[in-house]
Image (cartoon, rainbow over all chains, first blue to last red):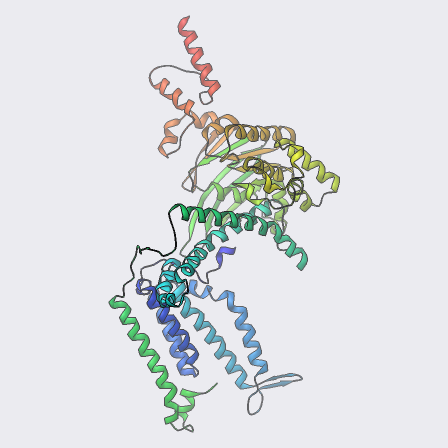
Length: 286
Length: 286
């Protein structure tokens, strides 16, 4: 079913991560992404993996649910791994050499490394942001973070309102799609058989009603907003004012520590003899 | 004879996630052939879920659904054949219209059935007749029609499959009294003509009392009670206990009875109660 997609779905809860200010989470997520890309040695990657696992534990969202979120990107991981294995040229003897297929040790290491990196990236960002932040507070946070842009004439509030509305209606649209699909299935429509053209044609009975009802809904929403005197952010106040709490500062501190550690571990190799065994274990460059 | 039968059927939404919800809990009911069976219950009592199981849109988590004594999920690949035999008109079916003309839209299901052009045209005309769609509308776009007309076209789209069992989920919701009577009246005609059975989901106790032979009452994912209309509506207190109403005339009749006026007869339709009261008065005069 369509509703089984969990990537980017909010799981309500009361864990320390859920309680963080959305702005904190947005900043930390950005930091997390940078950290994952800075992590270019097995040690650093292991550190990021550990951080992610700890965060999953703290969020109290079950591992099974979190892992299900990777399913949609599984293909991408396999795809990149495939190319990394077969396309990477390494030094020394290849592990396998059969006709046009040549596999080097470096290729395999790189494939594993990249795969892990993508998984950590998806898990970390979804735990920090999408799984634990309601769409409404997410856009609230974004609006405030981007407020300075208003000075150069960017209508930040309108963008965030558009985003809120878009996010708000994703579940509605999914539900609606499912309903329409069921209705057409009840009339004998078949979406899973036939060639490409036949399948694309089979989508028409879904897309037309979906489009019609979306336009209708947009119009109704606009009317409803106008009826309540909505006119952008002029004189508009917030129902929930965002404030940083001690918990937020704690997380900021931890994030900065992690970031500093990663930078340190990246600079450090220059000060250890590249020939030593420790160097190889810690700083194997991919 | 029973046309549809549910044996120990349970259904769970989003099994294994935090959103898991039991929608149907060990349901055992059967629907008599050639009869109109009403299905009543609160919103969220599991009516729509039940209905989606009957034509194979969803597979029961446990238990079996039998059509003419055969498990509909015996051959999962041929489930679409079941959908032609058990026609389902969903709630607000006008949202499923998509084709360029009313004629083409009603003909969607017959086309999917792979019928000949003549046969399709015949079925379209027949279905239009049962639902009271004027011939002059057939070449119009379904999006030009009024709400009530759209509803009829959508119902005609299911009737055109000539299903053995016709399931209607709130077919008269949002229609004026006259539109109600015409649509529901047309359905009675349909089953007399085609030796079919009807399952009618509705909130309107008046409609139930007037059109149905049997009634199934759902409450909190279970079957609360089932029986003939008389059996169900003659016990107003029981229905009141779970927050459901009986037809207003049935209420009046039961109040009169409680105050010592001994009424006899069909005490749930306007006609029946009228007769009972008149009889009572006449007897008193004698």
